Image 1 (spheres, rainbow over the protein chains, first blue to last red):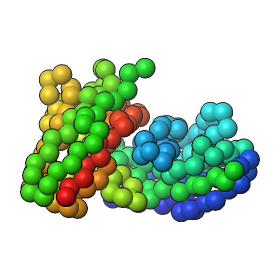
Image 2: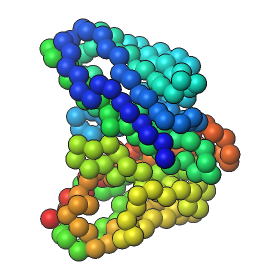
Image 3: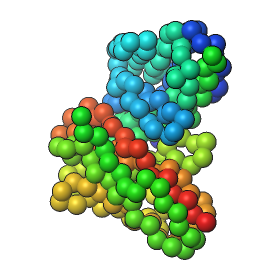
Length: 110
Length: 116
């Protein structure tokens, strides 16, 4: 099956700093999403981005499908950005089994 | 906008009991997914349904079963509960529309199951 690796596993930032989170995947995929899981456990959609670049406020993401990686950029981080960031992928093979990476745990200090 | 609804939000059961979790997808979404997330783990795919038919299966124990009903809501039935079943269970839905590769999933708030 598809392997998904996220880096770094843990990240501590000072409020206002920028960061880049990486997601590598081992096979071509049809779907790729970034999620933020807040401290209450809620999974929040950030981007649906199987290829290309998208931006939403302080967040942006880029997926280079041919090289099998995606990047999530967080600029001017805030304490509310704390939580776990997951990358999830799926491949159309008669179904849509979705594989999550292990996540990047982010803590933003005030 | 309407979101995915899950009930109950919290559930406490004893070992060997049964539990039923319910999921109401976003209106007009045709695909439902179930995930299990243990403490400190990433969500693990259990099973999915497309147009009320089982679509794909992941690491779902034989003690668990699921179905999608005519109104598109889904239920995850868990029997002979074990301590290791304690986890956050998510339901997600998407609008797949046949063989389109596009498949953006939206997650519900989850049901936190504790087995004592």
